[in-house]
Length: 147
Image 1 (cartoon, rainbow, N blue to C red):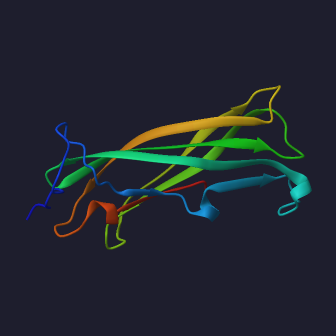
Image 2: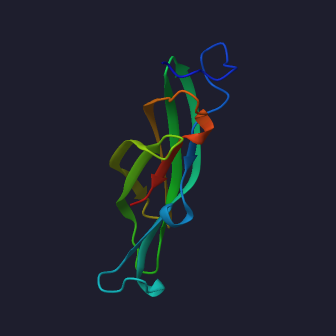
């Protein structure tokens, strides 16, 4: 049996309710230390962090298509230097019962210009998820992590 669509949709199919996009406090930060000095703040090369999350979704029958985005920055530490850095990104989608629906590992490239100590990044992606009958879209979650 197909999942019920939310009670009210916008004319273009977007849904006013949408799966949550979440970055847990300990997973929205990625700190890179100079080799052999893990945990020592004096030897931080850089720290990446997710600072903003957003989403919009469209419901099509028994599926929801979520366009989600995340943005953040890389801050140079005491041992840092301008240049390009790659942050690992993991995205996991779960349904209302915490069953994993999708998982994707990737990366985002960030450049800190030569005269700066910070560089910014943003990424927009899309994912299609099945919606189970009797569940609410806002009970679904998309987790974004720098790991």
